[in-house]
Length: 418
Image (cartoon, rainbow, N blue to C red; front, top):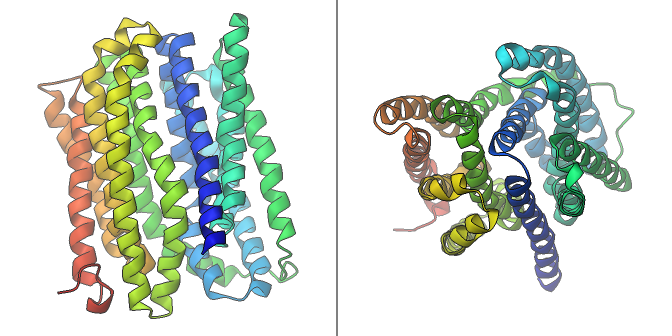
């Protein structure tokens, strides 16, 4: 238990450094760049994040459970099959993704950066998920720190001391360098695992079965992540590119909550939930769910308190009136993020049991609800339409998943026993 606590503390510390790095990056970009440039950065980052799901096809939702079910001597063959699938998906979707540059959805000047960063982010994400699944969370955190933390600190330092480098190309170049370094470390760590089975023939039947399972989850993921991509494009349409810079800043601060939860709580608890359910350990499953509930709520509460106390002074330090004038926007974005975070509690409870149907339907509904709610609010409050739409959408998802968890979970495994 002492070793586990030390590893969790180390993991949280590294993720905390990554979190601080993201804070520094988004705030210094807001200070050094014009709001419109920060808006372009936010659009590219959101589009990369969304496109990654097309390249991965959410296949990890199937392969992770398969890895945990099988002996380690079989893992090499499974990972090889997933690698072959990834190459096929690259060949299909990378050409299609060039369509995002039609009609200037993204400016042509970032086309090269878009594809380089997309591939690096996807490969690093898959390696990180693998390391988490095999309980190497510390290695996964180091990969994430190189991918999202170190380069952010370096580029902030360079831009601070050398004003001529305050340019988006410098930011994207540093991001690329960080991604390459993280990729090399991830490959090294997987190689050190000494997995066997790499010489097995590609199991196409396993791939096809996995695609059938993952396809439904992919639709759900594209829907929920579509909310986090459509929101930026819609906000730009309603308020303009300069105002989008403020939205990107506030969303970057708020979503740091999810980064911390993913690293310090979710990554440690959900593999144990899966194992407990598969081993029919009702007591262990309930204990894991209670731990998930308490830690998530506590972290959300502390984060909200700190964020509300510090956002004013931080915006004043930026010395850009546009951001301070839109501070009210931050409260709604923060509320939406908290609702999304709390919704992950029943989400992981359902996922651990293999009950994917309510997850799928709630995520699809989230996009529909977001579109309807935002369209309605935007008629009366154009600048608040998007964040209000997010709040309504994520509240509905929270209710849907919570009710589904209570209804579908066998009585001995329910969090609260009658």
